[in-house]
Length: 283
Image 1: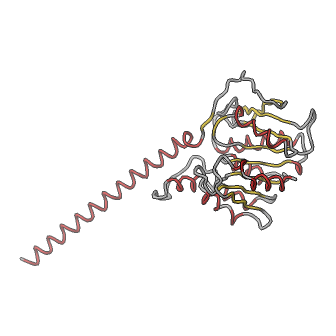
Image 2: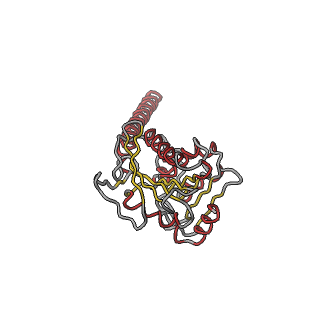
Image 3: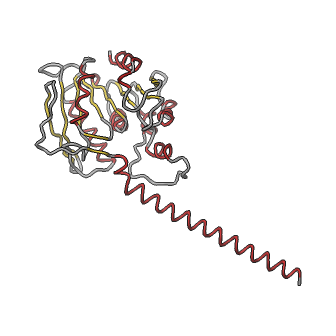
């Protein structure tokens, strides 16, 4: 009788343990489903923070510029600005892929810094930013980036085109660099991948979530043959420094990874080390 009781208790405990395990498994699957739905549905909101401008909006810059439209696959209508040193196109140009906020109304002002380095500038807005329109996904945005590069290549020789990616724009600049023969690739405050960036914010979550936008720079950089130059600040709170460091082992020995001590996400321009190195590689 005692054995039976013990055996009964054993069976009861075993069933309880199995029920609890199944409950945890069910809870995990529910959380996994909710997490995947969240990353797929709300990723646009977390990544893209555009400023929308009416098509009739008139840009106001102190330096002369031309405004152009580029029709792209998948219903894209891309608005870009072209700043030149003089009345005609110069010998060299920077194609600039900007960050995840604002519009050309703000980003166009980078001309002041880049023209001073002896380059013309071509800069555009992503779909849904500024005046640019069209349904957005990763592939279409990559094709837009290539179309803007093609706009530049019709006006400049490929060996005189520098691709410059800032933050989110690092992915599109890297994508184009892998698929072109430009002069070089410059990445300011880049990330390794959207997955890595997500888990830098939420390190306690398992790496099981799907992402609508992968933006996998780690996969691109080893395939890029042109020179790569990376800049990142140690106090960057938007793209943590450790996320950018994931890229360092992937670049060539002749490439550079410049660390800006105390640099944050939007202030590298105020550091002499950044300006001196940028001027050096562009000279």
